[in-house]
Length: 296
Image (cartoon, rainbow, N blue to C red; front, side):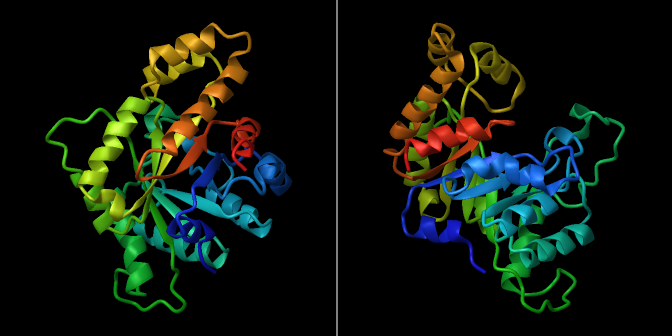
């Protein structure tokens, strides 16, 4: 089993990845129904891992259900809920269940969830998680030195947040993740085209885009109010006021949000170093499919 996403990126194909969240249910048919609109459109679908620090169906199980139904998953792994023994077991288990892509993340803190008294594990930090996956992949052994038969060949991903950079920006955090094994980055929402353009230009000058693929985060803004909420409450997000005003003054805010997203994608496709778009939004699979279908 190989990652089709990796092959598309290596072949210089512009990719579209989407995101889905495991349901509050034990019924696998709910997963299938949830993502059926994205089948044949998204090149891969991210499965969130305890998003918002709340319990849902297991991300590993959800990703396996996608794989069983012919949809390539990207399994998100957070450092919050597992110690290193559990992480190593789930890495091998995911590969055995035909999950070729992983995205290694810090994960939302439990104080923002609905069970704030939960104890966070954080046995490994994000770099430690990446190194663990990379060592299993390349050394074909556990960190303890025990050998692994049929070791996974993960396509390893990490997170990034495009932002307004200073002249002294050297990309050291990205280099650290790449050295730990990252082959592709999926970014936080990037609605400010000027910030993204300057950010990607700098990454190209630093030759960071030669070492990893960058899939830029976007989404469908449902309303001006939701945009203002995102600016206020979500880390690293800057939705320009001109976009918020445009959506607010439209006759159909949700439809205008789709138009904005499509227009930004057309612009981002022209930016060197951008290898694809990652479309996010809680329970927005249908809106995301509308956007991707515009380009397929």
